[in-house]
Amino acid sequence: MSFNASAFVEKLRSVVGDKGLITGDRDKHPYLTDWRENYLGTAVAVVRPASTEEVAATIKLCAAENVAVVPQGGNTGLVGGGMPHEQGREIVLSLTRMNRIVEVDTIGYTMTVEAGAVLKAIQDAAAAHDRLFPLSLAAEGSCTIGGNLSTNAGGVQVLHYGNARQLVLGLEVVTPAGEIWNGLRALKKDNTGYDLRDLYLGAEGTLGIITKAVLKLWPKPKDIVTSWIAVPSPEAAVELLSGAHAASEDNVTSCELMSRQGIEFVLKHIPGAVDPLAEKHDWYVLLEWSSTRARRDGGNQGGLAEKMEAYLGETMEKGLVLDAAIAQNEAQARAFWALRENHSEAQKREGPSIKHDISVAVSKMPSFMKDGLAAMKKALPEGRPVPFGHVGDGNMHFNCQAPVGWDKKRFLEHGEAISGAVYDIVVAYGGSISAEHGIGRLKVDELAHYRSKIELDVMRTLKRALDPQNIMNPGKIVRT
Image (cartoon, rainbow, N blue to C red):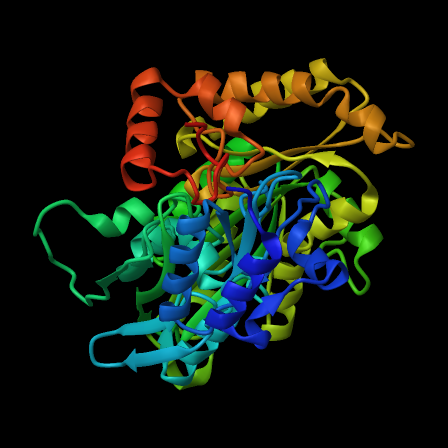
């Protein structure tokens, strides 16, 4: 029996209404291409349900008609995980209309939210109740919590609070059969069988659709200090971080490492960006400490700023620090952070680049950086390495910018050689080829190459068992 797209769309309309359906090519376009413009897919329709029940009914229709479902949140992904294929029978399921903050439990330190809630809105809702939701990343103004959880997002505070997986207590999920699993339990202890929650976290929508979540909250920090530090090398950065844990009384919340090349791009392309230090240096660390203990008398006495100033003085005497600036107010702290968070946007404006979201053990980071940079330069001597990221948890965005004057086509002809050289070094160091961005469409072949047969077999077994029709985000993570 042939597929009647028009009739299928009308069935979808009966579920989600006119407000929940996008069928025109121009209106569909923003949902069919990614932020980096590496993919441009097709879809029968973009479906925007307003409730879990509408999600479930939509999935049942798709299962009956053998139509694949590509879940999408804020469409800020970097590996094509939320992109439909160029050909095929697929819908994009956008959850952005499901954006309610359902409940904030200040006594139990939890928040229940719908999957389409924007991360910044969740952060603000927590702050309004004198609480903290610590997941923080550059796209927080547009990414959604469903996408964050489906990719097990990381961000800048992982070393203190953990990835998205560690920030969730319970989930509500729609299965590939269109059934609703209500696992919205605010329990910190629950050993009743297999942990279904962890199946869906980081699965990129290939096993089911996350529709709601119970999130963990923390006390809101009352004392935050941010510093911009020039260091002589990645070795010095790691040693600086190691000592900072004790010096801050275990209050290190972020530690970011950047090279001068990335800073030059930000200063060139981002209006208002200012170099915090008078002289140029090869490497920089953005270090932030925070505590729930308020400063005495509202000043720095006995606070983290005083402790950080003393620590930076000690480490400068040891040669670990070349120069440093401590933010004197919130605006200056935001300016420091803008230098870090605008790396991706600055690279985009500079031209084509090849991205590597990798991780190795923190103690191995300096050696990896040396070997990885050498491998990248050997693969393309004219390339411009742009390493930056979360050295505090061993995650670096180990990118390569195209040589000056090269177009995307010419540059990408070297992509396989560059990525292969980098990933071989990563695996040799016992690291991961995808630390926080996921696998999506971009790294399916790399995962198949670098992961063991038993790991891949288990992944495929799970996929086939939970989604026998292969309608949930097919072609992402593993090929069945």
